[in-house]
Image 1 (cartoon, each protein chain N blue to C red):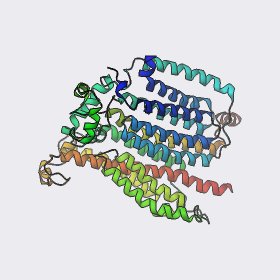
Image 2: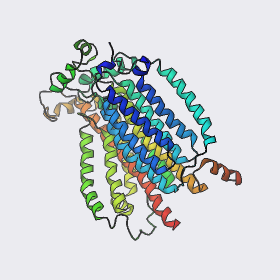
Image 3: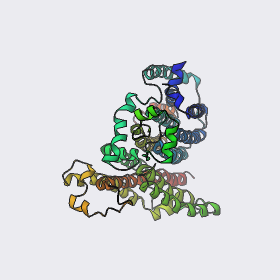
Image 4: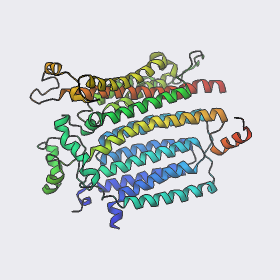
Amino acid sequence: MNFVVTHFNYLAVIVLMMTGLYVLFATGNLIKRMIGLALFQTSTALLYISLGKVAGGTAAIKIYPDSPEAQALAAQLDPAYVAQFGVSGVVYSNPLPHVLILTAIVVGVATLAVGLSIAVRIREAYGTIEADEIEAVRAREPGE
Amino acid sequence: MNAIALEASFALNVALLLMLVAIAAAIAWTRSLVAAILLMGVYSLASAVWLVVMDAADVAFTEAVVGAGVSTVVLLGATLLVRPGPVRVDWRRAIAPAVLVVGVGALLVLAVSGLASFGDPSSPANAHVGRSYLVETPNDIGIPNVVTAVLASYRGFDTLGETVVIFAAGIGVALMLGFGPRSSLPQPPVQPGEHHVVLRVTARLLIPLIILFAFYVLFHGDLGAGGGFQAGVILAVAPILHALVFGLHATTAAIPAGFVRGVAALGVLVFAGVGVVCMANGGGFLDYDRLFMPRVEAMIPPGLLGDPTHSHNWGQHFGILLVEVGVLLTVSSTMVTIFYGFAGRATHDVGSAR
């Protein structure tokens, strides 16, 4: 039970990822497949961000330790904890996963557009975007 | 020490994750493609809220703009082009994927059981390189937003690669779907939105504000959440909104497709050019400390960026700004190229079908 609490984020994200993967595999509709892929991709991003969260941390944008915001944040935490894990008196979450995922999201929409444009061209060539119907058309016209 | 007890927002985290699971289940369940696309936008918006709870302000910003904005437009555009019927459901075909997914999920659960507890500050992921970026950024770079510092300076080469991937994807879409409406085609007699006075007036008011906000997000990226990626997507929303309200022909008359492609290439060139200038001054590729020759750096007035008593690392400041401008140019014009590709295809496809 303690494992479910301490690793709740990872377990929930696995459920989300597997939902995306299921949508990707279970449908023959090419647009729905791209939606499943997008869902899978977004959920993978959530796993990385979960890994970078530091308890009691704040966004990785530097604030002065003597500012009211920093004082209010530090007041909620054990001073020994802040001294050990803080950077000059403020505890921050890990910025590295944020950087990796930020660029991946924008690359994700660009590659989603590439996948969708392939689906559009398949629709123009075969008259359908259902995978099994495309296979049927290809079987009828082996020369294609 | 129980790390979770420290976290007052843990309940909010759990509630938002359960909401995301519910939305994902609805996406898997629905047979309507349009419903699935709109739910995907809702999913992105909810995950953006969750990302704020996770302290990932920059990522939340990107997810809100990209996921709930541009990717919904692209998905709806593609759906319009393929004119699909409802998604057919065949339960026999769903069994094998379900078994597979449960198996992969079980393996992943086994894998995450080896991870440190959620929020653990001493986990391997959080204790080493991520922490050293937080410690070193004030000395090395001198800007408050550590995410921007890592993105544009420490891992600048990585970001250059990502920018090139976005550029290549934009060119790929343009090659497959065309570069916008064909000029030989007759202009449709009635533009979309011709009769919608409210839409036209609101769009005229919003477009300058959107452009202004994009540049604010770009120049504020050093100090707070924001940067070239977010600003680029926001900037692209302005011509997309214009095309949706005033018609694609009006937009391509104002911003020609060839110009947009040129700007996309220019962005990559600016980014790589900054790296080459650093090399020419004796540094490594994208080593912004060598962006200026020492003689030039000495001429920059100390009060240029506000506080004259604060020591600035000018090479890093200007290097990051220039690189972010390059990212903005490539991302915004790639998004517009993708939109022109899908929308331009619709103009002649719909016309020929009637």
